[in-house]
Length: 80
Image (cartoon, rainbow, N blue to C red; front, side):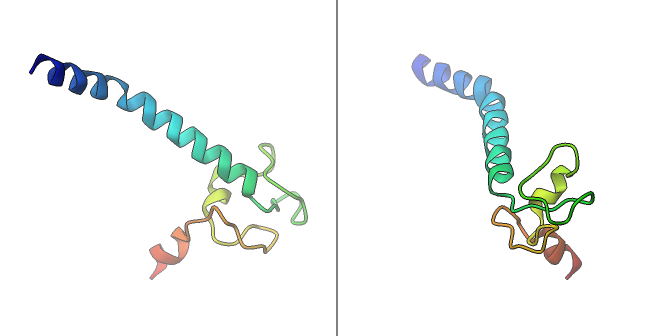
């Protein structure tokens, strides 16, 4: 019984850390697969912290017109 309480306490204690590590990992993967384009240069390749917004990572189509593998299509789902 005490071991079960201990495991639940550990899970609760580290769940926030796990969520942060997961979110940062997924963000880095999205940055690596982003095809490119920015407001400054529509033909640029890849994600640029200076010229792109993080929200660019979540669109179905990148600014340069290529299909974005990490995009969720949120804009299409929200508009329908």
